[in-house]
Image 1 (cartoon, one colour):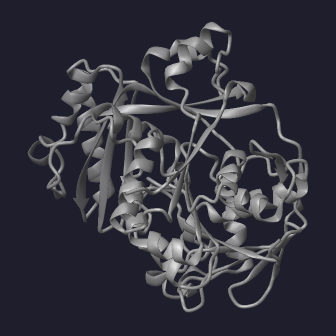
Image 2 (tube, helix red, strand yellow):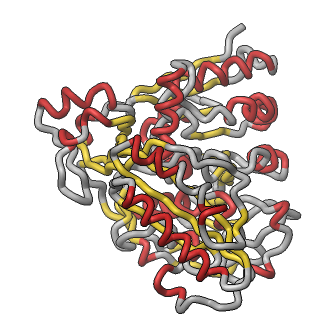
Length: 457
């Protein structure tokens, strides 16, 4: 057993820095590279892509990246764990195998693929057997929107990833794995933890939560002393330096920008946090109130004391469904009395929409530069703003009404208050609304499938 492993974060979302994974591989010693590409809305985007082209539906950025770093990964015996498979892990695997062939890695590189999370085609059968997949927030049964569902994926935990690593896969591609499992699965594998060692696995979950958002744990998007965070242009992504007892250090490669400090790690720990005593994953429930942080030197934070309990018998399911149409448009009003002019424009637009008899589920007006971020907490109307952007958004189930709204903003340039600009972007675009439906499913209903392929000629 190794006395320490280094698990580097290389992506915090689909669209993160393209060269971050390469810099993690080349910047210093690491044992694992985890790449988190998926969010709830990402699955529906990928599903739409696959519906148009069956060969798509995965994080395409991942493929050329693998072509670039796979030779070093194989040579240095690094393992890559990524949920880049999206709704088409097989397509992603095949594309990575092609890149490995181009790199001359025949007979050397091994690519693992995990499926079983995608239950979209199984929904009618599940509902017919009484698995209601009720909305966790509203209690509504999925049957109310079943005809509009676009994607449905269960969050799979560490077990199949561990199995792939035990089969010596250099790259492990998953679909909707939990973000944290991409980090703690290597810890279970390397240290031989049993699935009943809940405290240690909970520590791995905490490590995964720190790693999952990339540089957000190493100085990016950080409120603490943000002016003093050095060289964000070359920000170093976090690395988990883990020990067999579950304790670990958060750090980054030497010579990179950003900063790893107790406050930066604390901010990431609070990200997307519900009940801190009950952070539920497929493999354990971690108690974030037991986390202990301490300074371990420059750009090093030690994490210890994490406690956990056994997992539940359920898995979370992320579903997306179509819920109408939306559009947003903007105009900019300048000094003097910029906000007053924008408010007058809003009254004019709403009166015209009423006169046309257009009905929407919601019409939202925001004044960017005054109250778009803080809403009613923004205070009274400022009198001295040099300019303000008024942003109108509508949503509804009548596509024709939403489309007509998009045609009513431009006329305000000549038929509304003065000092207007900012319509160079053109008429707003009508978009489908993809809504989120969280649900739970018994674990017995989900059977992950694993395959590991050796690159062939």
